[in-house]
Every structure is written in structure tokens, then in C-alpha cells.
Length: 243
Picture 1 (cartoon, helix red, strand yellow):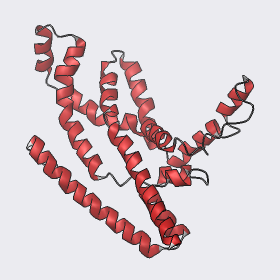
Picture 2 (picture 1 turned 60 degrees about the horizontal axis):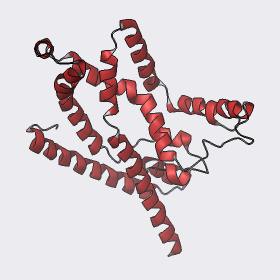
Picture 3 (picture 1 turned 90 degrees about the vertical axis):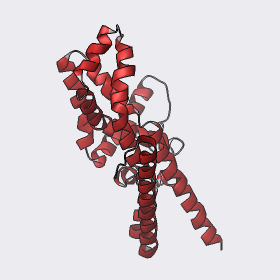
Picture 4 (picture 1 turned 180 degrees about the vertical axis):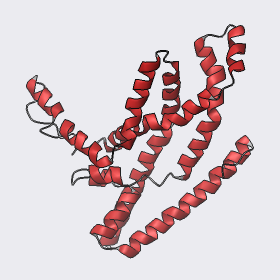
């Protein structure tokens, strides 16, 4: 009885982690759109291409290399602790990677850093597809640059944002595995485990293949239900379906 209660509590915590991290991604899903506007507003072509390249490259770096970078910077003997000790801010190292208090936020920060530039590409394409006559009409009406962004650029990007948001909601339970797998440790395991990682640990570490398969099937079923739900919502709000 006690063992079953422990498992239930653990599963509830994992669902909480999954909802928390997916919720953060949904909450800040507008960041790539804003970043795309920022890029297109840079007039210096070489500098714009440099920024776009630098922010897109992390998407092609594996999470193992990302963790290696994080370890070299934030471990107890890493660069950050070294500087803090050097300037007398701390006496003992801060265990950044072992801290479980802000795991959701740090995981969101790493995933945003990795995917921001790549995610902005679709929005940049949407901006490039805006009819020049809209800009000309705005200039004739005396619109400022901010007014052009608000009344011309943003409305042209909203359909793309809405479709991507709906697809993100449909995959709400699919956080992925690799990021959380490489960042997990004995100190943050309770707060970093999402459903995908839990299923892997359950199957590979605990040997409970039947339970892991059942959870995976349930997760897939919920994802399909969410997909059709947001598809119906899209048809109701926009008059267009996404599937």
C-alpha cells in the first residue's frame, strides 16, 4: 500500500514537471516571433547575418555537447565558480547543476538558447512574404516604424504563430528525452523527470517494460486527442483546420 502511494506521488510529480516545463514553453512561445522582428529590423546586412548564424547554430549542437558546455561553465570547478572565487564573492562553490530549486527555468533557458534562432526562421519567411504595397501604404499614411510593426508586420505573422502554437499544444506531453537525460542527477531527479524521461528510466533502469509501454501508449493517445481538439479550435476561431 505504501509502495503504491509512493509510486502515485512520484507519477504526480512527473506530470507536474511535464506540465510545468511545457507550460513555460507555451508561455514564451512568442519569443521566436519577436526575435524574428528584431533580426529583420537590423539594417546592417552583415551584422544581421552574423546574429542569425550565431543564434541558429546551437540548434545543430547535440544535447551532450550542450551539457559539456554547461558543466565546464557551471560545475563546482567551472568557469563561473572560478571567477566568483577569484573576486571573493564566494568561499565555497555554488552547485548550479545540482540545484533542484530552479530546474524548470534553467531547462527552459537552455532549450530557448538552443532553438530560438532556428524557430525564428519560419517567422522571418513570413515577414519576407509581406506585400510591399502594405509597407508603401503605411509610409504614405505617415506610420512610424513601430506602427508598421504593430499594424503590418504582426498581423502578417499571427497565422504562422497560431498554427505553430496549436501544434505545440498538441505535443504538450512530448518534452523530449535527451535534454533532461543529460542534465539529470541524483540531486535534481525529482524535479527534472518528465514523462519521456520517466518512461525511459522505468524501462531501462527498473525493467518495468509493460508499465512504460502503457504510459507511452496513453501519452500518444492524449497527444492525438489534443491534436484533434486544437484542430477543431482552429477551425472554429480561424475557419481553417491545421490537419
